[in-house]
Length: 66
Image (cartoon, rainbow, N blue to C red; front, side, top):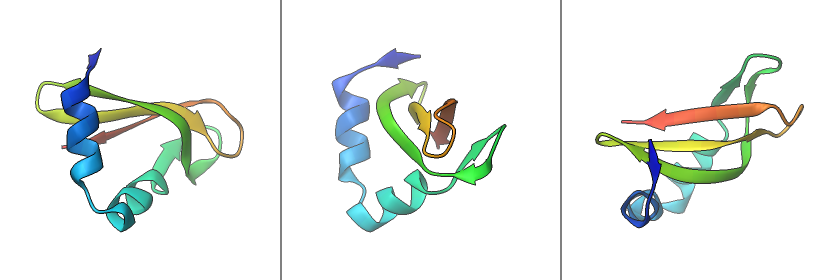
Protein backbone atom coordinates (compact mmCIF):
# COMPACT_ATOMS: atom_id res chain seq x y z
CA UNK A 1 0.00 0.00 0.00
CA UNK A 2 1.44 3.34 -0.94
CA UNK A 3 0.42 6.91 -0.28
CA UNK A 4 0.13 8.81 -3.55
CA UNK A 5 -1.40 11.83 -5.22
CA UNK A 6 -3.53 9.76 -7.61
CA UNK A 7 -5.38 8.12 -4.71
CA UNK A 8 -5.91 11.55 -3.14
CA UNK A 9 -7.29 12.94 -6.42
CA UNK A 10 -9.57 9.92 -6.86
CA UNK A 11 -10.86 10.37 -3.30
CA UNK A 12 -11.47 14.11 -3.81
CA UNK A 13 -13.38 13.30 -7.04
CA UNK A 14 -16.18 11.77 -4.95
CA UNK A 15 -18.93 14.28 -4.08
CA UNK A 16 -18.51 15.65 -0.56
CA UNK A 17 -21.74 14.05 0.71
CA UNK A 18 -20.52 10.61 -0.46
CA UNK A 19 -17.12 11.19 1.20
CA UNK A 20 -18.82 12.15 4.48
CA UNK A 21 -21.00 9.04 4.30
CA UNK A 22 -17.95 6.81 3.75
CA UNK A 23 -15.98 8.55 6.53
CA UNK A 24 -18.88 7.99 8.92
CA UNK A 25 -19.27 4.30 8.16
CA UNK A 26 -16.02 2.75 9.40
CA UNK A 27 -15.66 -0.27 11.69
CA UNK A 28 -13.53 -0.04 14.83
CA UNK A 29 -12.75 -3.25 16.72
CA UNK A 30 -13.32 -1.39 20.02
CA UNK A 31 -16.32 0.82 19.22
CA UNK A 32 -18.13 -0.81 16.31
CA UNK A 33 -19.33 1.52 13.57
CA UNK A 34 -17.67 4.91 13.92
CA UNK A 35 -16.22 7.84 11.99
CA UNK A 36 -12.65 7.95 10.69
CA UNK A 37 -10.66 11.11 11.50
CA UNK A 38 -7.08 12.29 10.92
CA UNK A 39 -6.73 9.94 7.96
CA UNK A 40 -4.33 9.64 5.05
CA UNK A 41 -5.31 8.38 1.61
CA UNK A 42 -3.47 5.44 0.08
CA UNK A 43 -3.89 3.22 -2.94
CA UNK A 44 -3.76 -0.56 -3.00
CA UNK A 45 -4.12 -2.03 -6.46
CA UNK A 46 -7.24 -0.21 -7.72
CA UNK A 47 -8.71 0.49 -4.29
CA UNK A 48 -8.65 3.70 -2.27
CA UNK A 49 -7.66 3.10 1.34
CA UNK A 50 -8.29 5.56 4.17
CA UNK A 51 -6.08 4.93 7.20
CA UNK A 52 -6.69 7.03 10.28
CA UNK A 53 -8.14 7.07 13.77
CA UNK A 54 -11.47 6.15 15.33
CA UNK A 55 -13.38 9.29 16.31
CA UNK A 56 -14.31 7.73 19.68
CA UNK A 57 -11.27 5.80 21.01
CA UNK A 58 -8.54 7.08 18.63
CA UNK A 59 -7.42 3.54 17.75
CA UNK A 60 -6.24 2.91 14.18
CA UNK A 61 -9.02 2.18 11.67
CA UNK A 62 -8.96 1.52 7.93
CA UNK A 63 -11.67 1.99 5.31
CA UNK A 64 -11.23 0.36 1.87
CA UNK A 65 -13.19 1.80 -1.04
CA UNK A 66 -13.27 -0.44 -4.09
